[in-house]
Length: 154
Image (cartoon, rainbow, N blue to C red; front, top):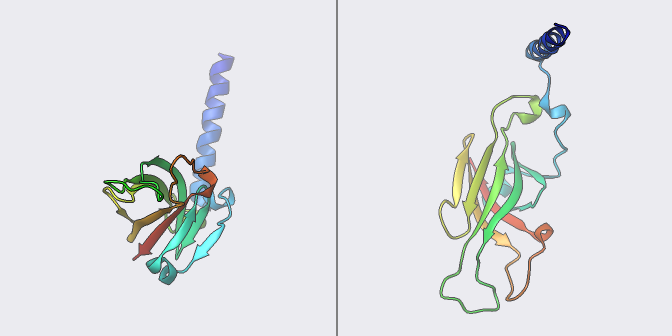
């Protein structure tokens, strides 16, 4: 019987916390990491780099370059029949994230040469333009050196 009461008390505490958040707007931004890079939407309409693992704000849109899922691009010092393709994951967070909204984020899987090259999220169009650095024959790319160049338009 004591275990049941403890469980009920825990559930009741969680429910009260959630209710309080609804009444007093508990903010997700208090635990969100600081944005490291900022670009205007005009800069984003040209192109901006996203560094692997870093959050970047383009206009009001927070983006994080999460991972390189695959990279079969032709090394720049080799002649290839096909230029190859790289696929990256970019997390797009809602523009209202810092105000504490609870809208869902999206994981975008974009390609350099395959499809899809772009995606839409919250009225923004995010297009992968390039992935740097280009591979070299026999070389391995340090994951920390990756940058995804994107165009962000509204």
